[in-house]
Amino acid sequence: MTKQVQLLDAEAGARLVQIARQSLESYVREGQQILPKLDLLPAALCQTGCSFVTLTEFGTLRGCMGNTQARWPLAEDVARNAVAAASRDPRFFPVTVAELASVRLEVTILTPPKELPYRTYEELLESIRPGVDGVILSLGHHRGLLLPQVWERIPDPAEFLRMIAYKAGIPLHELESYPPTVTAHTFRVQHFHEAGYQEPGR
Image (cartoon, rainbow, N blue to C red; front, side):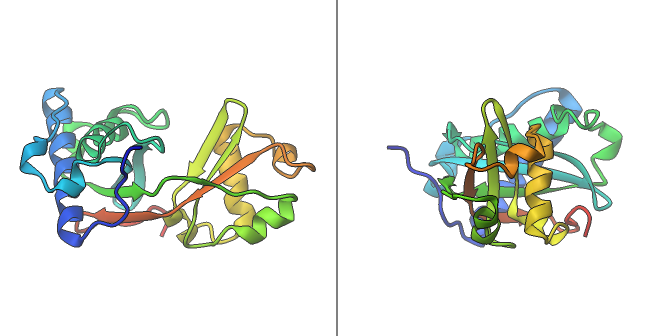
């Protein structure tokens, strides 16, 4: 069984932010994906883990990519997702060199997702914890999620779930169907960001 980082201290979080920035700068400026040297890092950052990297520009979302299945050492996962957020988010054009000075980033570390059983849509709404849970919704090959930080701009649970369903391409009637056809998972996070980072939509 793989280990996954659960809690990181502020120093480790700051190191991940630094790794994300170095990876972002190297890729945008030189087109090269650099990966951190694990033998120079604390053990907690070398364990297998899942992360998301969010980019903003003047408080507006500029890219966000990550994963919920642990495949890489955490530090490497962060470096890869920084590049993905800058270059492969389908909602945006790739980040340019001219934007680097104004882009700010946040690194989010995820706990392993846990399935949230429910019998009715109303029970699902009551079970998720606003401000605490990240939520993943799945139906067949459709899958979408929102990080817990998004509760700051979408505080209503029903709207929160509708936004995930929209992102995933899950019809709303499926989300509210009985018996349930949509699978729900929840997760918690730690997040660390650069000075000047603003949560999108705040």
